[in-house]
Length: 557
Image (tube, rainbow, N blue to C red; front, side):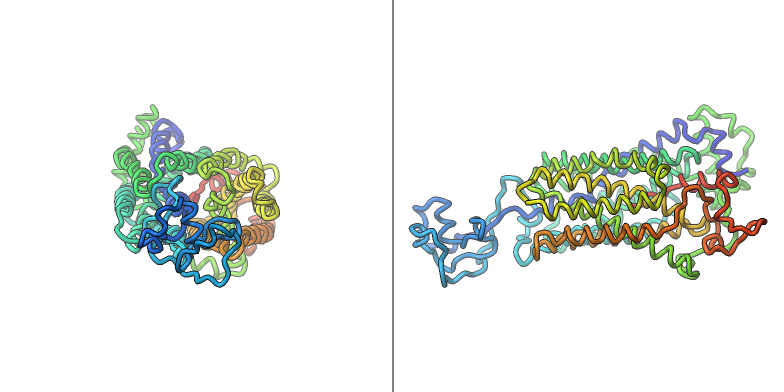
């Protein structure tokens, strides 16, 4: 008997599984909010030099605020005060002559800056003067966070395999909340950056482990539904953070407010079961039997475990991988596997870079950034629900390449739309965000069908690592707008369109049996009729196709 057969007998999607799904749905709320926290705490508000040094003798005392700025700070081309420079001494003649001064000594800010606090009470920039020459440091904190996420994903994958899903989930919840709260009370920028790295490193375990637990406790036919719900949990958090940030305008308290909900995840952790599959595979059949019995009782299928005892449970087949151990090196040992790893790696990197490049750029359209963020989250709902229809209607590589192409086109269109057309630019950006959500959801399912069974986990792990690298690069791409206001859009558009061409080179998997071994991918293993096993009719291995199509390990999103 296989584990899937036993799970079906005790109801593979009953009240027990729904309880686990709901707990994990809300348990990852903080992680998803931390992903977009930089959009609100790393904002650089309008600012100009502190002109207190020019008024040391009270010579500006009788002037209005506007007049003080006129004689103290040079005006930019749009008429607003310069952000990083001031006059070396007051230019009173400018009060009578509106022409720009010539050959007047201009120096860098001498005594710090004054900030516009009408939108934000406090941000990283206002806290540590991350402006002018240091303005890149504000965005750098987002990159540092995602580097932590990248390494944390690899670490928690190994740790949960060694010590179990449940204990490492608790470690992730507690440590992630701890580092998140500590970062809110940082006394220096360096301290904050270090704590953000460890926040990303530790909190990412919650999504990786909870996703695996969800998949390992549900039956094959319900894994697609679980995948959709998992993905929508991110959408829920992306919409929620815009509302939280709207009411909490101080960066410290905003960080605290999105970290504290993890307390709920820690409390409800006691109702989370350990993976029965992991327990059986690690020789702990007694504990596995206890959890399966609890599942059967809650699902009102107690008779399903009545004829099974721990001794027989130890003989259940959890996986059919065989005795050989596969590693990441097997992804590059053979020609077609190397090509597959290269193409999927480029696609994943591009999808993640473009998706988060759009998500991090909510303040460049001239509209309310909170509303923009909320709409960005809301558009993901229809985008993600449409994925499975598009996959069956048009196929995998058409959907993947087409969605990336549409993202690239939308980004390119916005380059040519005047910036004063804020509503039009935002609508185009939202459509692009929806297409990027479709491409992200597609690449996860598509990749799980492309890799052979013996390397599927390794392939998905490699792709997830590359995706995290892409997310880390996205904030740095946005800094290129300092060179030219549309530079980042040109880069992201080029990446999306190039990735569409790459994705189109991937083989179609619709209507084909999934590859089981590396030989299947290389086309070296033949059936009894002499034809490649991978090209056989769908009906011959329908069960295997459905199983691996729906067995998604959603490590990104």
